[in-house]
Length: 84
Image (cartoon, rainbow, N blue to C red; front, top):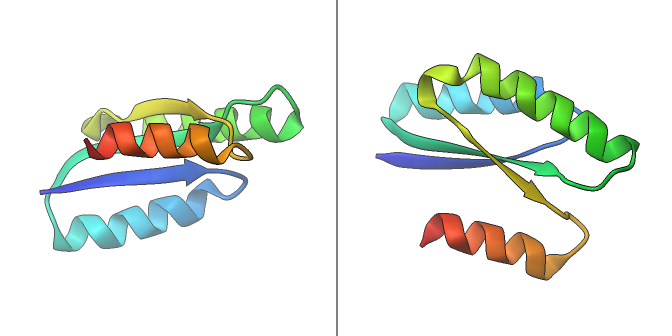
């Protein structure tokens, strides 16, 4: 069983292609989508793309996690919580 963790930015199609390759070889247990939680244009695009991916991957019931990508400690806490 595999847990996938993806940071969603400007190119969600790349995430889908990678996810399909993983899905072909391994059973997926859960999916986590990290998105930029800042209130600038990058954050809004990241959230928009994360919601689109959430709809496309709805069969796997992905969890959306807000993260501040420029804060190492925030990213570490979110990834560590998923791994734990």
